[in-house]
Amino acid sequence: MNHRIARSFIGFWRHWPLAKIVHLGLLGFSAGIPILLIFSTLSLWLNEAGVEKSAVTYFSWAALGYSFKFVWAPIVDQLPLPLLSRCLGRRRSWLLLSQCLVICSILWMASIDPAYSLVVMAFAAVALGFSSATQDIVIDTYRIEYAEVNVQALLSSGYIAGYRIGMIVAGAGGLYLADIFGSSPEAYLYSAWQKTYWFMTSVMFVGVLTTLYIPEPKFQGGNIYPYSTTTYLRFFGVFLLSVVLFITVFQLFPTFSLEIEGYAATLIHFLIEAMILLIAIVTAVGVGFLGSKYRLVDRRMLVESYYLPVSNFFSRYGQLAVWVLLLIGFYRVSDIVMGVIANLFYQNLGYSKTEIASITKVFGLLMTILGSFLGGFLVLRWGVMKILLLGAILSAMTNIIFVWLSVVEPTLQALTVAIVVDNLSAGLAVAAFLAWLSSLTSISFTATQFALFSSIMTLFPKLLGGYSGSMVENVGYSAFFLFTALLGVPIIILILFLQKHLQIKE
Image (tube, rainbow, N blue to C red; front, side):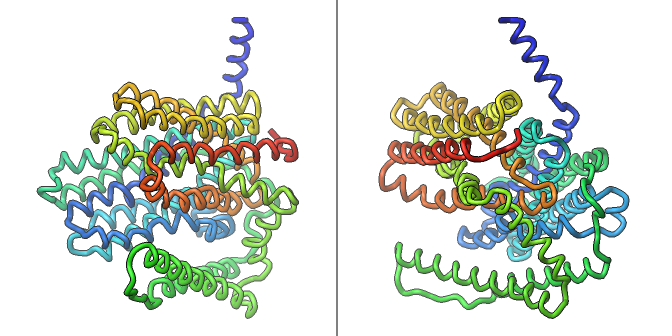
C-alpha cells in the first residue's frame, strides 16, 4: 500500500511543471494587485477623504472592463504592436503593454486627491479597470497556450495562489500602509494614500520582470499577422470610435426624475439604465456594421475577430453548446451569491473586524491556495469532469456549514471550521473549473473565447448576488444559506448530463 502511494506521488511529481506554475503564480500576483485598488481599498480612501457615499457610484464604471472584456479581446488577439510584437512576441508584447498601462493608471490615481477631484479620480479608476482587464485577457490566453490541457489545472492553481496573494497585498497591505503613513477616518492625509498607491506601483514590477523573463508560447498555425499594417490600424480605429460612442451615449443620455419611491422606483431606475445600456450597445455595434459596409474595416477581419470564435464554439459542441454555456454561467452561482453577504453575516454574529480579517482573509487565503493545488493534483489523476463534479457537490454542501454557523454560539473555533471547509472546496472547484474552461477553448481563438467564458462565468451569479441582502431580510440567514446550497443541485445534475454526452480531451 505504501509503495503504491509512493509511486502515485512520484507520478504526480513527474507531471509537476514547477517552473510554469511559478511563472503563472507571479503573473497571477500581478493580476491580483489592481482589482482591489479600484474597489475596497479605494472605497476606504474615498470614505476618509469625506466623499459622499452617493458619489461613489461614479466608480461602478471601473467594473465595466471586467464585465465586457470579451468585446476588445479580439483586438488583443489580432492586433500587432509596433516594435514590441517583433521583440517580445504575440502574447508577451500585449502583456507588457497592459502592465505598463496598469502602472500608469495607478500613478494617475496616486496623483489625485479625491477630496478635490472626484471626477478625475473616477476616470483614473476606469482606466485602471480596463488596463487590468486587458492584462487578465492576456494572462488567461498565455496560460492556455503555455502548456498542455492535462496540466492546466496545476497552472490554474499557481495562478489562483498568486492572484489571492496579490489581493491581500493590495487589500490588507494597502490599508496597513495607509495607516502607517498617517491617514485615518478622524485625520485624513492625502499624502499617506499617495505613498500607498506609489508602493503598489512598485509591486507591479514583479509582473513586468516576469513578462520579460518567461518564454513566448509556440504559435500553432500559419502567419501570425496575415493583414497589412493599414488594415490593422483601420480595424483599431473603428473599434475605438465604437467605444467612444458607447461611452458618450451612456454618459450623456438624459436622466429622469421620478416622484415615486421604494421598490417601484428602484425597478424603474434599473429598467431605464438597462434601456440606456442597450441603446449604447446598439450604437457601438452599428458603428462596426457601417464600418464594414463602407469598407472602413476589412470585413473578413471583422468576421474572423467576432463571428468565427462564436461560430467555432457552436460548431464544435452543436446542441450541447447551450448546456455548456449554462454550466459556465451558473457553476459558481452558489459560492458567489453566498459570498456577497458573507462579511456582513460574520459581523452580525458578533465577530470583530480583526477576527474576520485574520480568519476569513489571511487563514482563508491559505486554505484556498491549498484547495486549488489539491484540485490541480486531483484533475491530473482523475480527469477534469470528475473533479468538476466533486467541486460542485462540495460547494453546495459547504454552504450548509453556514446554516450550522448561524445557529451555534459564535466562537473562533466554529468560524475557523466553516472557513477551512468552505475555502478548501472553493479552491478545488475554481481550479477544476478554470481547467475545464481552458479545455473548451480553441487554440485558434484563445483570447476571445476565454474572455467570453470568463465574462459569462460571473455575470449571472453577480446579478443574482445583488438580491442577497433582500433575501436575508425576508427569510433570515439560515434559510438563505440553505437556498444557496440548493442552487448547486441543478449544477450537479447538469454536470452529470454533460459527463455522459460531452467528449473532452482530458
